[in-house]
Image 1 (cartoon, one colour):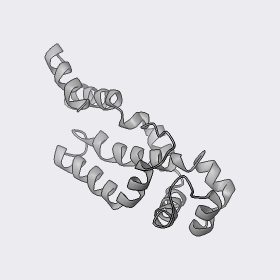
Image 2: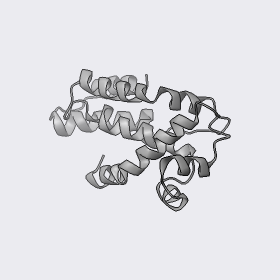
Image 3: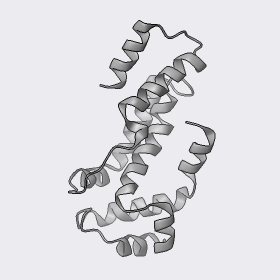
Image 4: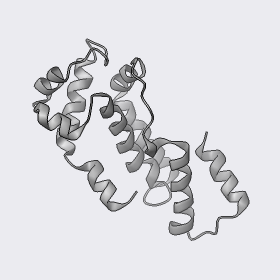
Length: 152
């Protein structure tokens, strides 16, 4: 992930997490599909204008959450984190939001995985890490192994 993309991902972090926290609390009483933006804004203390500046809709909050923990954990494996640290970071932080993620899994709205958590992206990040950070030439065999692992 480029620096400018990382800054954009983390911009307005306090407001985004306030929205996420409010949604998590509200989802204990209602479904994601039935959740109203006005209720999210009221509980989070964020105006509707700010909400829509940060997210085009309530479903995008799910995608943002997955992008955050993917870029801060999984994408850092082999760069600033070990395998264990990267996996632990991503899994433990996503687990903190298990109620929210469970509610998102029950939505009738078609939720596409963000590009940052797809097989293709994982493969690109691993290849970039191997070549640029580890200075290892990617052979055909290694490329095959990366593709197989990334798509598990």
